Image (cartoon, rainbow, N blue to C red):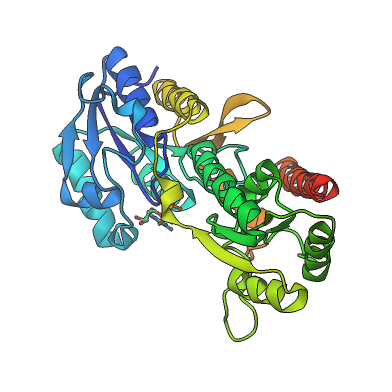
Length: 359
Ligand code: ADP
């Protein structure tokens, strides 16, 4: 069993509800294992500046109920530079931090790998509302964000129903359509536009018209912010609103569920998942493991090597560059391909199902 005296925990990149539950779990599990915990404030930037706070068991009391992150978050371009890394290592040395748990997305995991390579064993926990990390079927914050979107779309649908209107709602997710897909399904949207599936705009508008002709009043279309802009750089969702109005004549409004869906009290799913992932992260460190991201696969919490996770992600997003696969065995590569096709098939299936029963 690895011997650590003190570990650091940080949250980095975009915040997500449930990050606090992960911080609490990491802290309590470490303390219970005889390890001190330092909270690093403002992501990697706090590591550069030595912005640390000692976390005892009371410091993490009651935070499980709150969205955001009590350790704050930031983007830290400085951390990616050699000077930044030196400052980070100095902070670890000065404060006797032996290992780090970093909660965030793929950028955060790259930082964790860099730290591990420089002698600070690090473990990542996936915290992002986007659910866009291919290695894991779930990322902390996704469920809460979707429930927030759900409330907003349900409310919009009521007013659309009253006024015989259509509403296009664009939701966050960067280049990943998961939030749009799931919230579209759960609000009974007639059209869903996500970057992963070619969007048949003509068919979508025909469906809106057909629904209206059969007396449906409240019409909902959900679009992902990741949809490619149209020619001239116009945002796709706004363009889609214009297309619906000009082709169908149906009065159509636009709403964007932006950063508001990043906040709010975490749901049970996010609290429990974050607790499990935080607990497992410390267990892995105790077992002498590092450079892993704690994933959720096939109903189980499973650690996955960060390098594997990052390359898998690039494979899924068609962003592999020469040499990316060189360090992996044929078995690894076959497993990566299988994960990618499994994820694509799942999205296609969910999308098809949503379209089949939307009207
Ligand atoms: P997320 O973790 O949500 O993907 P970012 O991509 O902004 O968010 O990454 C969060 C932080 O992780 C960055 O501000 C930076 O400090 C660190 N980071 C990102 N990419 C790298 C990298 N290639 N090498 C080292 N650190 C990185």
